[in-house]
Amino acid sequence: MTEINIAMPQGRRGKKASPDITRDANEFLRAVVETTTDCIMLVARDGRLLQMNAPGLQMIEACSFADVDHVSLYDLIVPEHQSSWRDHHRRVCQGENTAWEFEIVGLKGTRRYLSAHASPIGLADGTVGQLAIARDITLPEPRRECAAASQGSPRGESWRAHSRIAGHPQAPAGQ
Image 1 (cartoon, rainbow, N blue to C red):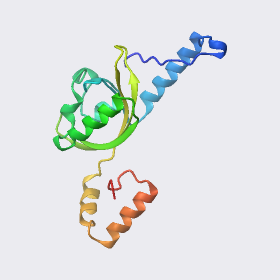
Image 2 (cartoon, rainbow, N blue to C red; image 1 turned 180 degrees about the vertical axis):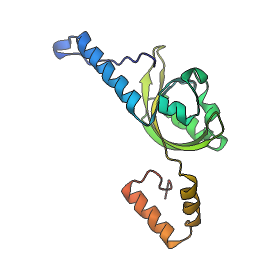
Image 3 (tube, rainbow, N blue to C red; image 1 turned 120 degrees about the vertical axis):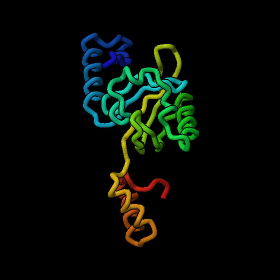
Image 4 (cartoon, rainbow, N blue to C red; image 1 turned 60 degrees about the vertical axis):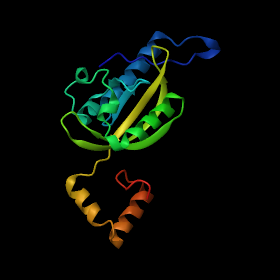
């Protein structure tokens, strides 16, 4: 994994944090990135993928980061979601925190529906990029068929209403 460095807040009276605290914070951050099951990615202002953890690589069906290093993330977004994705990415790079859902097609052709939360992050080249955490919210095939079949049924409405209240990640968006 690429070396990850985080800025440490100034200590009391403007003193810099000790190297031990900085090292501990970097180790903590590395452990979080390596143990989460969600995709954590760093995207440049122009859409190039700069970093991605192992679960993210699995979502996009890459064997290693070398397969996608500096590849345009736009190429993985399905055409019908590209405009929305670009708009959210632009907003993040202008300093806004945002969340949205979109669909991708992995390198081996698998379609996945993702929910992302993103924040702006300063990059080494002085530009602002996007730090995002994305979760695969794709319904398994049998559940997708059941959800489609129940769209007009009272039971389907009940499930959608309950899912929205419970914050279920697979509840239909915008309903």
